[in-house]
Length: 402
Image 1 (cartoon, one colour):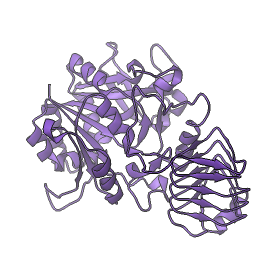
Image 2 (image 1 turned 180 degrees about the vertical axis):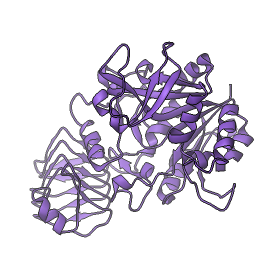
Image 3 (image 1 turned 120 degrees about the horizontal axis):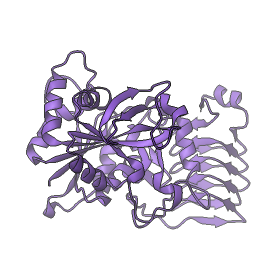
């Protein structure tokens, strides 16, 4: 059984501005050592799917560079992770949607001739054994299998929601952000929301993409057009993420999945990492998250620095400062008397003496002058040109002057 994996990584990520002002959403740094795309790719590689094409488009240079430098596979064995930019192979237009991205990259499918095509998004934080989902797809005989995660009915209006027939597998309806959907038979207060991960029988996907390309009314979207069309033909099945088994996962960490599509959810996801018993455990070595390690010395704490419930990456120096519930990237300097609380500092940030940062995200290479206050007075933060989210998270963009 030949499997080809396609990762949809062309998203602009408008809701993550200003973090996506200079990079594609899948290239946004996460947890100090990673990019968002590393989670999808690590899941596929750990699952044994070693032929992966990453479809890129929006401001893709840093993403292309990260993939090229980090994700090197054995060419001798025919394995690869390769970025594939928009190439206008099927007309003089860029990708019109996620389905059109695959349609315009049909040469990848023709060249590889897979039996199964795995289509994953590139911007969620989670662990998943994709091989188990492929096995379930083959057993069901469906044309497409959609990964579903259980969420409270009260949150259904944030997701595409699936209702399932009595067999427990066949998707009966695909509802886009419904206000009052029915609950699950075994859990009335929950619904199955689409995770944006799909497994297709190759011939079925090709036929669906060809038909979609000819439909002038289509938005050419995988979740909005391709899957609903296959649901209507009774060709779609659901894979309950709750059934997925991950080596080394303990407790709720096993079912963790976070859409980090907004500044608030991105910040919350970092706070999920830092406690003694984190909601998502980055330290599970039985299912590692891979990335390119920085060639830097270990983190250093001097002059009575106090660091609590925090992740501090290589090359960083915390000198006589207090850091609490924060994530500090590589090569960061935090000077004497500074206080960092519930804050994400990306690579190369320098926090001056006596500065205070609360509930903030500071992008790469920003210099925070001594005694600067950020996250204390939101009106003052806005006046200085910083972005303040609905949840009160202050964001300082890449290289922004403070």
